[in-house]
Length: 236
Image (cartoon, rainbow, N blue to C red):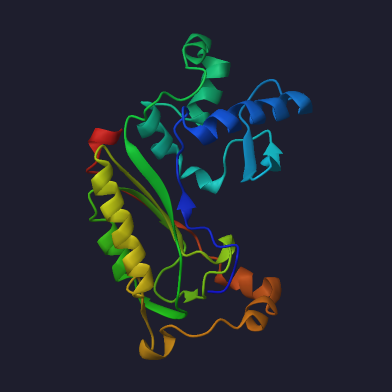
């Protein structure tokens, strides 16, 4: 859609990977420099040709409404920042039994897929969401889009149309399901619009999008739906 700031997802990185071996000591060094000794932390670091470049460091868990928690539990064998923080206060033995870093390799393959809209209009139906929930690796869907919602082209995090957590012990199935979702996006098959034809791929008018201000953004916000897979007992 012509924007440089579109999120397509979050990919877990093995703690023994090249990137992790650079990032883990770097982030711990930043926390030490800031005097953060206890509790969860959220860091954002860009990998550049000159090495890590700090974007953000904060004394909180990762955000995203916590939809990543189930993914973390599946990859690590049962814990995330949330459980670790609670155990630090309430179950100290359990906390100190946690590894220094996540085990390698992960116990499953998983990803958060952030949904991108290549079309715009008023939503009539959401057939793509129904298809996603039938995928073998589906765990969780969070979205604020429903019939009657107005959808714009995705140009940043605030205009994404939802987030899907996928996880499976077979990485091949995971990759197949990710491709299926990306194909739905590119073919504009996630939503049916009203009227349908006039809303399919059009050029992004950035002046129109960004001149509307906070009032239009507030009007588009709706209560998010959270849909869990109840048939994935193998991952919980």
